[in-house]
Image 1 (cartoon, rainbow, N blue to C red):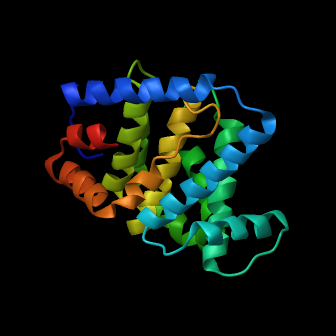
Image 2 (image 1 turned 120 degrees about the vertical axis):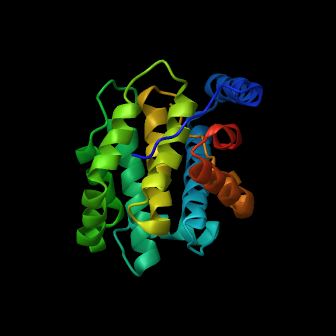
Amino acid sequence: MKQFSYNSSPALRFALSAFEEHRQSILITPLSPKEELRLRWDALVNRLYGILTIAGYVTSKKDIAMALGQYRAKKTRGTTLTLIEGIRLAWDEIRRSWLVTDRPLTFQAVEALVSLVFPKELGLYRRGLRNSEAAIRGLLDYLAPSQEHALIRASVAFIGVLSINPFDLDSRILASLLYHLFLHTVGYDARGLIDVETLWASDKETFTKVYEAGLTKGDYTAWLEYS
């Protein structure tokens, strides 16, 4: 794993405080079961759109919503639909297996997520993981349970995967999944309503510029403030 650093800048402390207030609002706002399910569905569609967009795929929220409907009906067609299904399955696995747990995240767990996202090209993606196994294990060891804020751990996981870059642009898909997984392990997104990728996708130029600068300099402070 490449060396990196970051510091608790005033801008980062302010961002964490603001996000914490927003999260508290999400958690305590009373919602009917119907309304919460609708908001969770909207967040899922938006999240998938953002993940695919920052990974370089061209799609729309309408197409994703339609694809998810077909997924429920067990229909498949085309590479994009298969990828949407895969990310949805990986998201379900994160919600089912990693919501509030002290289980350590292992390399095998990362492999399991990849197998859900890319089942048709699993051999290719598994080789990419295996070639980067030592670096991935190093990142997971670094991010093992600690006193660090959940958002910092999640954001370091994201840019750490991009630094290792096992799949080129598709590394951003794995990075996003690990971002949310780390939030889930401590219940930070208990309602499943946090979606950052849509905001990143709305200005891909800035998103790319900030994380690439972090990778080049080995200083993740600006990326943490941004993310």
